[in-house]
Each structure stands twice: as structure tokens, then as C-alpha cells.
Length: 276
Image 1 (cartoon, one colour):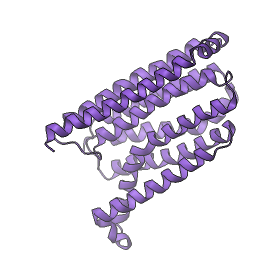
Image 2 (cartoon, helix red, strand yellow; image 1 turned 60 degrees about the vertical axis):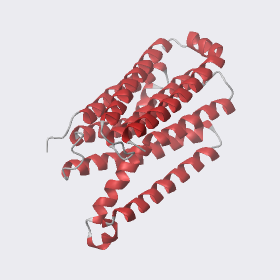
Image 3 (cartoon, one colour; image 1 turned 30 degrees about the vertical axis):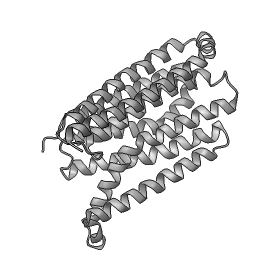
Image 4 (spheres, helix red, strand yellow; image 1 turned 90 degrees about the horizontal axis):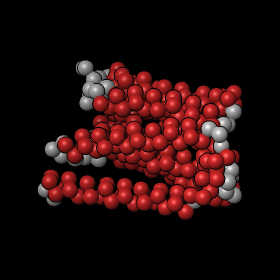
């Protein structure tokens, strides 16, 4: 397939999948609109929640457009390219935030079985959201191992790819099974930090390693280390902040505002190149 035809093919597939996702979200809101309005009218801080999450969705959408624009601007496109991986990362986050907003409104309005199905969908999106960064992290981890004599087999790129794919498949399999078998909303909320925190530790290590070893020069690894480090800290202290402030609209606005700032830092890290 010619490069120009490949670009058109990739663009068509991505656009088609985004449209399917957008229509699915629209229908989800459309068929539950009365419940959403009822919940909105009964929550004093609902407007603030809508504004901050909508702001995140709009800003993240801009990040998605830019990262994919940068990917398609390249002469050749590979799925391992940083613009593509960041684009997928931001894209799943957009759909994740639309479900977060929906879940905030229907949490106390629908029965637990329906709420659980929505939260499980959000859980699976979260897993897919971290997948691009976990893939990149596994590549870097295996590369660091290949520098040691006893792991000299990993100097072979084909061998590294095999190990990487098996590792990622194993992680995804365990996480998806855990989500499918979650019996209640409470158990699913316990899984969130168990999945998020180890993933963020791995991603933080990735960009710290890249910064120390002067790799991934097409992005600013120092800023990304700071950004993902801040995101990791925010996810660790979030349960404590929730306990102090309480599970309220004030807490949601506070948490989403912090995350908005953090993701602006992460995007800045992608936007700027390293000076080495």
C-alpha cells in the first residue's frame, strides 16, 4: 500500500471509530436525559461539575486533534510512533471523561446493576487508555534489561517484541477478567487504584529513565516525568482528599481542576522536544 493510501486508510478507520464512539455517547445521554436533568436539578454544585469536566473534554479533544495531526504529518506512520501513542492515550481519556460525567449524574438515580455496567465500561476504557503508555514502558524496560549481560537475548529486537506483547497480553487479560468478575460498585472502585497506581509508577519510570539516558528526544521527557509524577501523586492522595472533603460536588470540582492542570503539563511535555 502506498504511503498516501495508507494515510487515507488510517484516517478513515480512526474517524469511523471516533464517530461510533461519539454516537454511542450521544445515545447514552439521549436515552437517559430525563434522569440526568433530574439529578442536575437536585445537586447544588452540578453546574460546576459540568463546566470543569466539559472543559477537560474540550481541551483533551484539542490534544487529540494535535497529536494525530502531528502523526499524519509524518512521511510514514507507525503504530509505535509517539504521536500515535499519545493520540490514543488522549482519545480514550476523552471518552472516559464523558462517561465520568454521565456516571456522576446517574450514580444515585439508577439501580446498582445499571450503574455497575456503566462503571465497568469506564473501567475497561481506563485500561485501554493506559495501554499505549504501558506498551512504551514495556519497550523501555526490556531495553534497559538488554543492557545487562545475563539478558543479552533481549538485544534481539524480535525477541524483545515477543516478550513485550506477551507481557502486555497477560496484564490486559488479568485486568479485563477482574473487571468482568467485579460483583459490585464498591469492589470495582477498589480495583481502580490497584490498576492506576502501578501503571503510573511504570509510566513515571519510563520517562525518568528516558530523561536520564537521553532517549525519546522528540518529546520533553523531563516535563513528562514531572507531569506523570504529579498525576501519580494526585491519584495516591485522592482517597485521602475525598475522605477530608467528602464525596461531594466540591470534591469533584477540586479533583478535576487538579487533573486538568496536570494534563496541560503532560501535553506541554509532548509538545516540546528535549534539549539533548
